[in-house]
Length: 406
Image 1 (spheres, one colour):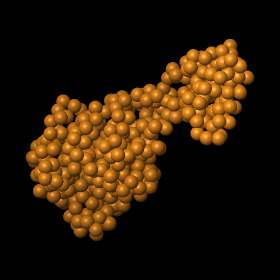
Image 2 (tube, rainbow, N blue to C red):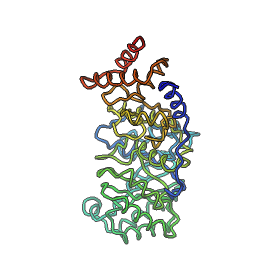
Image 3 (tube, one colour):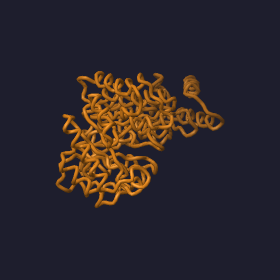
Image 4 (cartoon, helix red, strand yellow):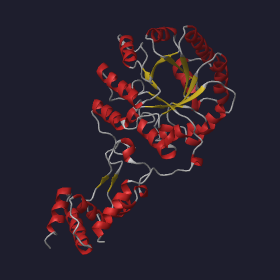
């Protein structure tokens, strides 16, 4: 068997390798829910200016993907917000995703949110000393009473779901945080959000604080909202789940205030590489479409380092890498691109290509008569060309074909 034929057989194997088998001991996570905040937190991204048409497109795309909750901005934000909310809610009728409305713990805001007919209300109030001094001026006892009163009111109005966000939870005194949790648990809050509002917490700190709360006998579900100011949003979200959180806040492309929050694609990548069965309820093929949609609306490119959906996420260039990938795709990939409806790219038009990459391309061109010496010579010529200037795949094809008559 010559080298080209051998690579052909390797390619068949590489394309059909099963999902990498991961040890279940790598994670303790048993269940996860996603609250996507692209249309609330994402609106705070400096480059975002979503029209109603944009909101409808994003909302429907998120629902097709299958997130449990879609968070919307407070209807107190602008004059026609309630009408928009009602139309979005109608558009999602019969779909799994539920719309939640983000509100301050202000009665007027809550009453507007209730008028929208949203599935639930997401209340928030600052709990750290920083926000006490710079925002509402309330003691932890006063802030807790305000949140308790609002939860009672929302419940009395028949709302199906009420959550309270303890804003800046990871710079809040633990005793203060537990004081609020106890009071909210006693009045039947459904979920409490623990935001890393300035993105300063480490994964270890997130795990310890969430674990401290989840190990108690509270009845509410735990949510985590992680900002990305120090680049830890995905890692912190993972740590929160390991600590006992159930729901993680995300946004498409991670957009939001300042550096944004945990990106949906980054979060999905983290879980897919650990325990893919957690994600079977989501349509992963919709993920690239979501990122592309929002990037186009914002007029930006998908970041080069975005997990899964970056144009380079499944691109291989080095000759050593390509050789291994042709034998077993698990050699240099923790996830399979086909699980997301994506194709991998083997970039052989470079100054670091190798003969196995050339042999692979020859097979794609229907050429199976090249011998080992010819492949070595072709690879060398490609490397020489690529060292002088950037070259295209067409250039590689011309070089390969020129050896047919040698």
